[in-house]
Image (cartoon, rainbow, N blue to C red; front, side, top):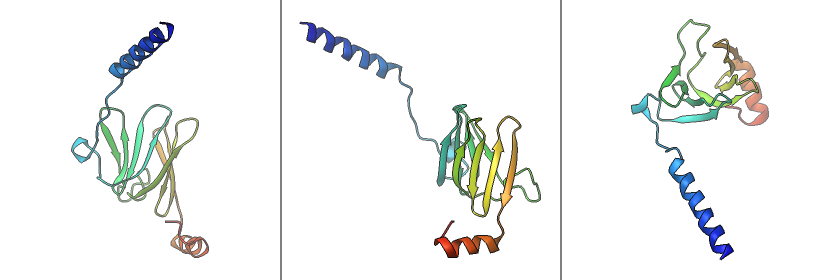
Length: 133
């Protein structure tokens, strides 16, 4: 009898958790994603989802996408639009690897700092490691 009661309570808890679970759905270009090819994904401590694509950096807040792209001769924009890797630090700032360098998105200041590697350095690293990009 005791075991039956425990099983019934466990099943009720499982079903109540399923009823309260958030639904998961696909997000694509039709929802505002900049490109269908997602090359990197990261969720920061603020719950924002960051998606790197072949056409910029996408931030998803659960409702809308905000897209960050390269703007010619604008040092506050992405230096290029192909994002290879995403990470974040303990403050929620985003680090992103690009084809020719890396960048840091300071969340509180809403500011991007880009670091660009020269093609000479990229070629030198590729010859020693096989390929970094």
